[in-house]
Length: 393
Figure 1 (cartoon, rainbow, N blue to C red):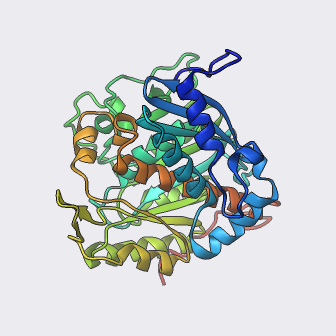
Figure 2 (tube, rainbow, N blue to C red):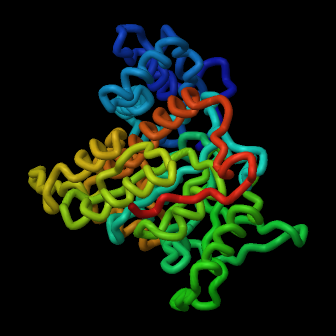
């Protein structure tokens, strides 16, 4: 995006967009302009960008956050959607992108945490394969990056890495100091995947559990992630080794559970929720992927049934972050190595992922503020013994 204009008088289109943004009303009747929430309005051709300064909301945003947890709405997503709609209603504007300026709270990590400079670790997981975890993780990471956050994406599916294909990356990681591994980067997101280390993309990784644990720990301990607001982990299906290892090795902010609506998916996803509960991984919300299809006549078809995502959310006592429709462009752009949020940010399907990201940030912010304080001792007590995980009853 272009830098904001330094001229005293903005061009007519920038002025029109600014006025449209300032006129947007909040639920309490005050306007965005009155509170001074929007700054750095810029135009690059027909693409508008602007920064939303949440500090201007003050107590309003804190109060809205409490309401959001009760009714599963999101002040950030609500404001973002209203601002983008206002900007795109201005003739000559086809795309509007909101960046968020706020002091994002971080997870309560212990001194020996392997990711001390990462504020939040988000697990994208499901007990079921084929529900779109990788698609959700990559588009979520890009939506967070485009919102102005520092983001990393770790492909934790050692046996079936998808990140190289979905992000069009084929390079090899290097070490500049002989100690740490430099992650690759694409669209401003730091990346790591076992797929970057394979000689042949079709080569199978045939490892037993200890080797998988070793690779995952190396990705956490030895990759130079640097300072990040979010590290998103794309987990493999099931309720096995990877999630257990992560629950023991670092304080995760929480998990985003991905499902499709039908029972054959939710039956397994319920098990994933139960596992998170057993190993103390907070559930931040649920994404219902492939939720419905809109045909050329505008008719909505629920091909895989309905209600599965809400059922999982109710069981997890977590919000339903969003329902992502079936859209061929998601597959097309993913196969080309440019996820739809990056390739077609103004499309309705991209906006579905953007709104999920905005709702997630609201949940993370509220949760981190509420849980700030002494960290939970997971060592098993003063004796320093290994934590015993109740994996079955």
